[in-house]
Length: 397
Ligand SMILES: [Zn+2]
Image (tube, rainbow, N blue to C red):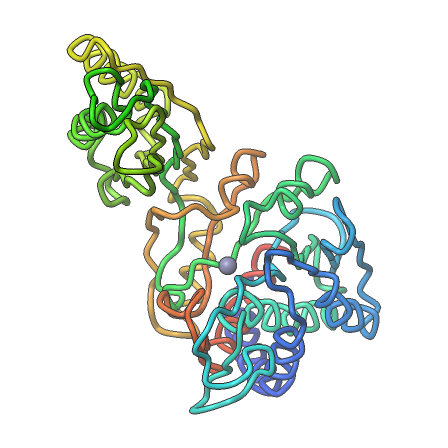
């Protein structure tokens, strides 16, 4: 795009999306009224909102279900390459308690939409639908394709959602943007820590509580081990885009009564390691600690089980997505979003593992996701639609 054309386009998009505010709000409210709490999900309830919209614009779409009623819907605008996938999830976390109104009947207050999923992730889907409309109306100018996906199961690991679409349905793209990181469009998620969830099992021997010497106390041995694991030295402790690695002891289960020596104790750990480290390193180091404790406490015996292991991910910060996101966020909001690392895991991990250049970027306050009285600023959604329309045009025309 030459400068003049690009300034015209920016002005056109600004005007266009500002006029679409009502539509974005209506779509967000309709999506919120579909009760897609996961579990159980039932994303099929939200699909008609997206399907009717695609149909009304003659946007070709496909639906995919690994499990009945856990529907994913993908719309395709333009043809050819490159391709940009934008995936918003249609499931929400359970509403929980203490809402001031019905979490599934969205309401507007002080320029914000309230309701479960407003900021995570249905508001973003509504904004992207307005982007799809703009691109469809300008389809003749596109060389590439926007794939807008409303996906299932994001809140519980994505095995019925993006993971399934990528591994079993042949869905792919050159670029992907996942608008599910909040931070009010101030950051671009380019790297994520590895997340290793472990269960440690301490085996003992049951005995009468009045004669503990006749048994082996699985809890005491677990305490000794956990005290040592707490001191775990990560091999890599710093990264320019990340906070340090972390280790959380999330649960301990054991014991039945004061007068029984417990024979079994289980503890669960959540370990977030840096991209330059590895799960093998962490596991080796924990195994070494286990051996040391077993050597010092001859009756102690431990096992370790991997609950899940999500590898760290990273795209270069000089990739084209970072450049276009920065450029258009600057032109709409006057701010330059910073490439950053995430401690939490998003679906960008799965995309990057499939060779897709994927980043996270989107509107919303960090504190709103999963909160009671969840909400999102309407103007922020409109601005997000403007930025995403310009990004799509830049990449695809
Ligand atoms: Zn989300």
